Length: 454
Image (cartoon, rainbow, N blue to C red; front, side):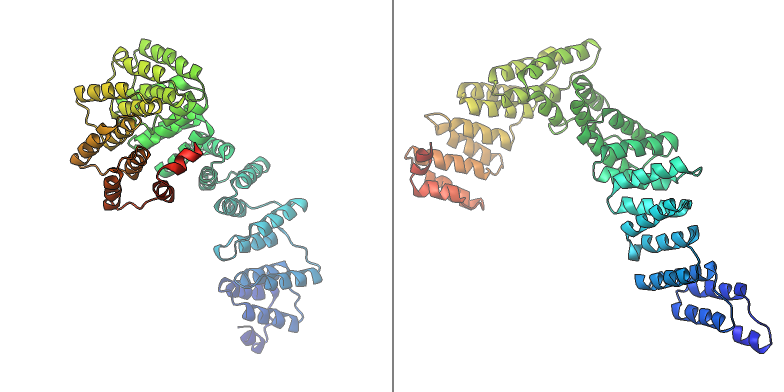
């Protein structure tokens, strides 16, 4: 084009040359762009700042040395970089192919030092890059700093990326700050997946107010409440010391046709097992809830029983079990399995038999864990014949005995010089289990290895 203009005696000016460079820069035609600059020089037209900007843009897919060569030539022409220069440099390093957060931040700092203003879209690119690379604290700080020094506001998408990044690494402060911006100020509703991530952070960090708000937003979103939505809320309430509210959440779940499990109530157990006074204090909270017309969920009492067992207080655990009727609750299989584990520790076979009888009277069907624990309980006694009876009953109910059952039977028989250990050993192999090194050592030593350690 320039050649044709010259033939016609028309001299191209800087505007025409820069427009040509703009077209070449869009297609990253770097060699052709330099040829245009050389043609400019040949007719005595000096490049201006826009000329170098087009060259920087054209070099965006090349190695960094190409950009630095351009900047060196700018310096040689005594043309200082301005906002657009830095923004082109930042754009280069926020591209997917050449992501370099450190250099992008260096450019942002340099702009601030020179008193230059960062454009909104560029700021969002840098913040988004920090969030995507797993630096949520940096991303949130950059976002808040930009909004504090600019009249423009970041997009909801940018804040959402900061929220997602913070939740991914359980950065509590970042999650709280971003949630307030996204849900409170911008009135944007995150999707269910992001809400779940925020819930997990709230649960781990004990942010009960945040967890409660997420549950509210999920309802607004139209999501069906599920157990996995409430489990982090229960955890957050327990870590915040709000045990009464945690108990109340179990009732809310049940009234919403969501059934709490032992896993849901695990944070309650973790809170109670730290101190026997906490176990005793839990009853006062349950009584308050009952007086307020709330229904006490059996998982709450199960958590108390489990905590008492963990504290080696079988008497308190049995007392909690007997309190079920007072709260109009019915024990479940988890109740009995937990109590049986306490019987094993105390070698209390009589209580175990009574629990098994009451379980059957309630019409509750024993599961694999029930059989495993009653077998282990039988093995704690001097006379352990019933262990074989329950083993056969377990197999008759189509349950595959776990390795731990056979391991315990074999060790008990060998210690008692009972040759039936060979039958249990054969069954262990038939179930596809391998003999552990410790069990093999025990067998080879005739049980002496265990006695020498004790």
